[in-house]
Length: 427
Image 1 (tube, rainbow, N blue to C red):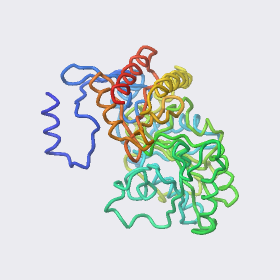
Image 2: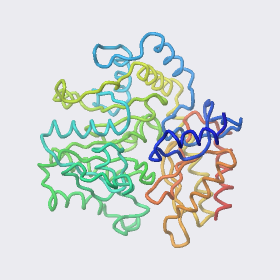
Image 3: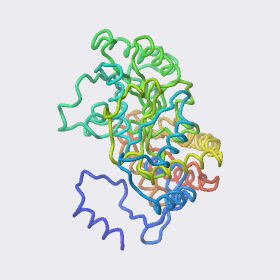
């Protein structure tokens, strides 16, 4: 087997719609590293697109999944299985306080779809307010609230009706042209005005937001904005949905980004890092909300797969038992400090932001405009030197720095050295 052969075969059987970031073929993964077919090893600071929060092939997860594989692999909602119940109990023990009932599905887009359906069903309202720049998934309902790039929506109209967009609080590129010192939360004011000019608040089921913008540019929302949005929702009986598909399960140095803000959503969408690479996602909400969703109002065949659920339980326990939230915070502090030192030396880096192991590095041209080409050169240089990173943002000009929580100090420093050399050579 070699990469060229695998890529050629893939081109014959997969639609071009299926995107892979890099033309390398992985044959083995362990911890922070992957090995390719020609024997070369890479530091994987993509974490499988923010999925492998505790690294490749974590021992406890593999063992738990293997034990379950020997018993049974599927129930399909025909009968109960204990691994799913245990995983739900474990998940509810780490979600924001009061979010204690779970619906399992398979992927992040499904969790978003379920969250939107739950909000509409329980409130008996149809309107959804989302944020420009968000990425919530590619299924029809999820892509209707996605706007990180128009290409995700191209040729799929008409989309879900009664969806309204308001600006995300992207402070480095303030949609209202204000500096941080001038900030008066115009973005929150705009959201309020939407309930006056576009849709009455008693017709809005939910606001849906990524508290830490993912695909749209790796931008954490300001705390005062999320506090104000929570108050706005409470004022009008509107549900607040947090999409933490990418920012959850310890990625930010807390179980969920919501924990950093002390803002509790009504509904939480969870996926990616929940089961260390096994397909699983969840809608999580309060008992009094979830119990209004009667039998048959939503469903799944493969959601809550017992093997995936065994993996999820082992993932949560590993993060807890090995104190990986604290480890993620320390890694993030070191990475942010070093990345900001690098940025201070380079005009090509406009901003470094984030917390924990979820950091965005934004590349700009001499005029301060998004520089996707420069970012791409940096990523290719990193790959050639053994470091896998990926980009994001509408203009693909933001590097996602998302190492596993189990990254060692030496691995982090090696990755930062490679990145520093790449960024310096691309200036």
